[in-house]
Length: 407
Image (tube, rainbow, N blue to C red; front, side):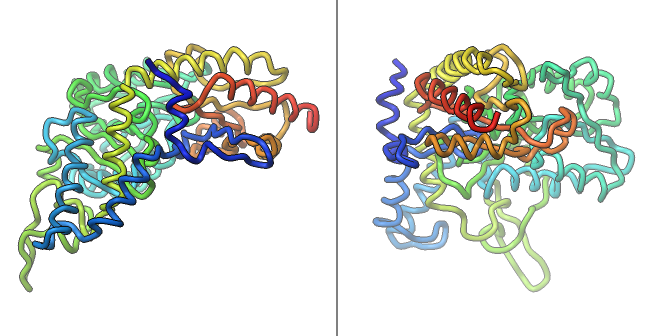
């Protein structure tokens, strides 16, 4: 049974007041909160076996190395990777995408090729491809977003020409909440001879993820959005593709042999992990993965659907409020971006903060999408495992105060 009240007890940060009111955290799309088991796992590393990995033959270094590599294996099992060697630790999903753009992209994209992405992408899954296209003389094209917030799959079919070498799309929009039909996109892209990169920064924390079933070529996601610490991201890629890719960064630990005349690269996954890695953060992510596994990702997803359904119903009753993206809870994630008449989103967020409610206001690193919608900014409330229907009611009450003060 998914017991939200019990789950909330695992998150120390929720036991506080803001401006004299209980904290309601509705910004998990930007960064999730951390359960005590994650905090304690990282604290234990620093207190008991803080040492660099892969370098020491003394006990605490060996213990740190084992914990770090076990973290990689647990993350691999979480997404059902074929091999732990396919799991690369980076700083964040953004770095993971840049790694693919520079390493795979520079080696494989040529003048005249097409990179296909969508209008609903986060800047992290857009700018690296703009830069790659500029470097190589390729063309970047965009799958349109419909008025209902879905990807235009008819347009995708038209855009998927033999010139397309890579399709890079989000598996869940951080603005619209849209969950695109990624299985169909991957199948059609492969039939056309293109590789696929999925931006799973929003989907992996909220949906059961099986990279073997998805059959994608790359998947990226971030620790801090899935109950883990900041400063750590993941790149999963097919082993045969990663093996052929040159290193992204060079230096210590990514080499097997160095002479004054040249170097020999290390094996996967260390070939892509130059320098001292984020050891404590990897250990923290492993604890977060264990926590999510204990909850069950099917249950995590169902809780989100239930809360979003309730939130859509209640928000639709707020006069002048418009939610963007799909109307069906099962078609979307927990990010609800909205406008409220002509009240500026920053003003909405400021009033809500006075009520102890944390939401995000701005373009959410998706300026082209906001331009498409004819908006400078939106307010975004996003939900995760620790959010309740009572908090939705508090949000609605807060918005009514916004209208009273500013409407």
